[in-house]
Structures are given as C-alpha cells and as structure tokens.
Image 1 (cartoon, rainbow, N blue to C red):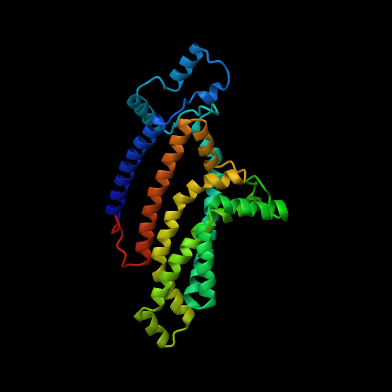
Image 2 (cartoon, rainbow, N blue to C red; image 1 turned 60 degrees about the vertical axis):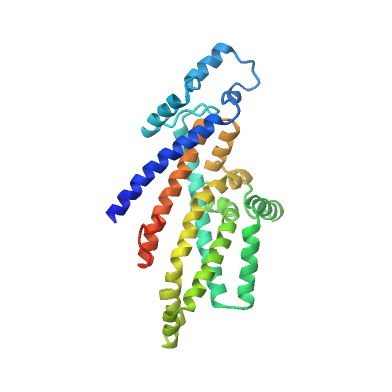
Length: 314
C-alpha cells in the first residue's frame, strides 16, 4: 500500500506540473488583453499601462512568467486577480465553500437516487425496469442548463417553494437554498449511475454464488446486501468518482443559473475578464481534484472487492 501511495504521489506531482504548463500556455496564447477589463473604456495612459504590465509581469517572456508564477504558487501565493484587484487565494477561500456544499449535496443525491433506481430495475423486471430505463434515458440526455431553467421556472417562479438565488447561511438554510441547484447538477450523474448499477447488479443476481445462496433459503435481503450490492459497488464507485470533476466543471452553469458565488462563477467571470491568475488557479485545482479522486476510488474499490488489485488500473 505504501509503495502504491508513493507511486501515486509521484504521478500526482508530474501530472500537476504538466497540467500547470499546459494551462499556463493556453491562457498565455488566449486572444484578448488581460488589462482591457481593468482599464475599461478609459483612454489608456501609456505610462499607466506599462506600470500595470510590469505589476502583473505581462511584459516578461513566457518562461519567466511561468517560473515566477510556479514559484509563488508553491508558496501558496496564486497572484492577484486582475479584475477584482485582490489576492486569488482570498477569492478561492470565499467561493470554495459554496461549491463544496453543492458538490457534496449533489453526490449524496446521485448515490441515493442512482443506487435506488438501479436496485429497483435489477430486482423487478417488466414495468419498474422499463420506467427506470425511460427515466435514465431522459435524465442522461437533458442538458444541465435546461434542467436548471426548468427547475427554477417551476419551483421558484410558479410555485415559489424554493429561493431563486443565493446560497443561504447556516446548515438548514443552506440546504434549502442549494436543493434545486444540487438536483439540477445530480440528474445526469444519477441516470448514468443507475444504468451502470442496473447492469452490474443484474449480472451479480444471475451469478452462481448468488443463485446458490438463494436456493439454500437465505433471505433475499441478506443475499442482496452481502453479494449483489457489495460486488456491484466497485463499478458504481468508479462512476461516482469520475463524476466529481465533471460536477465541478458543470457547476459553472448551475451557479450562474441560481446566482451562486462559487468556484464555477468565479471561473466564468475570470475567463470573460481575461483574469488569467484566477483561471489558471481554478483549472489547476480541478486537475488536482481529478487525480486525487481517482486514487481514492482505486483504494476504495480494492477495499470493497479483493478481486480488484489496488493500482491495477494504473
């Protein structure tokens, strides 16, 4: 285990380094002047422009800018936002809790809805299976922004059950405010988990050891928990793990639709304003979460099913 974790840590460092170079190069080559949003419609004073370029190191070659940024990032300093004129680290600390709440809430909904739908479809053939198949097909094909608009229109404008914007304060109020955004973000992932889980559970239900346990008179609930659900868990866990980075990217749409000040909104506003310190930092954060999630899922799969050797996928 320690050897595996050591390899994964080395891989994580290499991937972050490569990702940081690619992200920095893409932002560097992106069209548009980062200072345009800062100067606005004012007539640029050449002396002021030169001062700002020196302040944000825009007058330096690519490699010098990258190494300067990397050195500061390793010390926890991700630079100063061009549009907000404040430290990027402070912006992240302010926005990250909203996105973290949203992702955790959405993942809980995905696990509950996806696992329940998969179990129903695997256990009961006929009408229940057909309903789940239809629901997952529709759920997987509806874009997230359409779901967000529909939920907002029905439950905030028409019925006025949930608040239209804001993340709320306190545990209960925050859950109340984030319910619709979490549902909008969880629908596609729930559909995918239900489809994968249905196939995995049905395969386990038809396996020889499950049929043998059932023929011996073991209660079906115990057979389902001990054999079907446990053996179907690794592929379902992989789906859940892969959906976390996708949810962070998808939060850009949901946070905009529901007026949430999270990392998604921060990333979108940063991209529109050519605020490269903000864009680089959040993009690198998404890469970090993706790699760490893959390692955690690999370890959990090995713990759930001894047949899955930890690190075999890598």
